[in-house]
Image 1 (cartoon, helix red, strand yellow):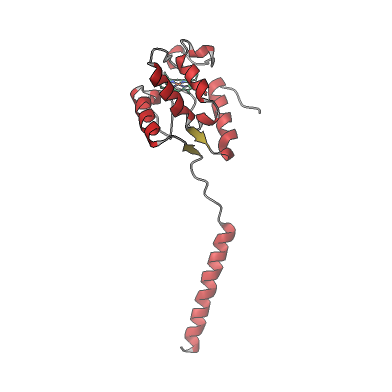
Image 2 (cartoon, helix red, strand yellow):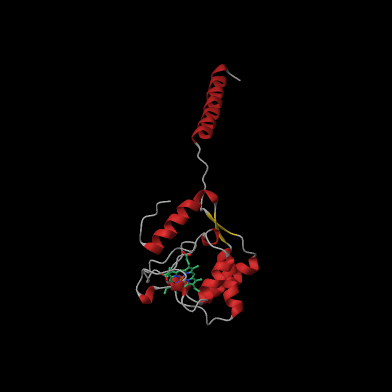
Length: 158
Ligand code: HEC
């Protein structure tokens, strides 16, 4: 190898190591979507199918999906299973008047409908499905804040 080639090789080596080091220093971990599901594949399939059939996304967003023709300021359901329990959901879906549990600030046609007429198995399935929608710890406070503000229309002061 000629000495000129050696210098070029050495230069390239310095560049590669240097760039690598720079990346390590400046790289911030990409935390990605802060939501995850704890549902089994079976619960996921059945829950999502019932959720679609009952048109929940006419009012709610979940995994960024919602019916774009509707503009109901209902709380997003992403991570909702980290805020409330499966029992709570079951109780809420079974209530003849859900607003007795969660007061609404919205006009009647935009409020959470009662699902008390659904068969018990479907209310249980929905409750299990909602309970499986979790938020990562680092995003819990943010999710709580957004939920509170959607429900009340007020700014959240923890
Ligand atoms: C007509 C619009 C509408 C539809 C359809 C609807 N919701 Fe709601 N939902 C709301 C609103 C609005 C609220 C907030 C309380 C209120 O204003 O009545 C709510 C509240 C909730 C909550 C409580 C959220 C919280 O912050 O604790 C859950 C869970 C929920 N809905 C799940 C569902 C599921 C599951 C379906 C489908 C079976 C559904 N909703 C269908 C409008 C709707």
